Amino acid sequence: MNWFIKFLSSSIGRKLIMSLTGLFLILFLTVHLIGNLQLFKDDGGQAFNVYAHFMTSNPLIKFIAYGNYFFILLHAFMGIYIASYNRKAKGQQPAVTNPNVRITWASKNMPILGGLILAFLLMHMGDFWLKMKLGNVNMVSYAGIEGEVKNLYERVAISFKELWVVIVYLVGLVALAFHLNHGFQSAFQTLGINHRKYTPLIKKLGLLYSLIVPIGFALMPIYYYFFR
Ligand code: HEM
Image (cartoon, rainbow, N blue to C red; front, side, top):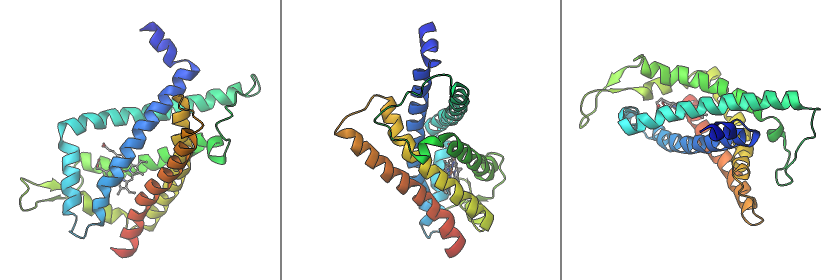
């Protein structure tokens, strides 16, 4: 056990934690985006509310959600630790550069981008998740569905009618796009997936992912602000 803790607190162990938690969060974002696509249905929010009810009441998904909160915190704290460690170490030791990882604006600014995403996330969770948990949303009932469910659709629609909220979302999502573009390929590099044939493919997939996911999320506030 001692060797395991020693490994996780070594510099490669810390990178591994960033990589594995990052890949988990990439998976979470994909599921969250696909589920939220129900917001585009013209059904008064029924599909979205029924979906959100399932996601927040199913015991297995609830268990995964606690893992998700833990991984978000671990990824954020480890990122802050690595960034401050690198700042202190600057100038004391030669920089170790991996020739396969291109230095880009995003790669140099990962801590700032991560900080912007964290700020966005705090606002997002305060507005939707916390209000849902505290019961500060109306209830609604649908034919064929037992009992009442929380009307999260109404909450989303109200929030996305505020221009400042839309702007904060768009800024957060631009930061997410840059963060994902570097993070996606960097996670695979850390896991040692470094191949003449596959690395360019992973980079292209990363670029595609970092465009599709933030644009998909960004269309939601834009659609609600202008067209609903
Ligand atoms: C812009 C469109 C988005 C909408 C409409 C939206 C909507 C929601 C809603 C209604 C909830 C509470 C219900 C639930 O847990 O499913 C929620 C939770 C959450 N959202 Fe979003 N979201 C959006 C984007 C994002 C983005 C870009 C991120 C991450 C960067 C994110 C991260 C989270 C997290 C971590 C939770 C808590 C999940 C849980 O409890 O398991 N969301 N979102």
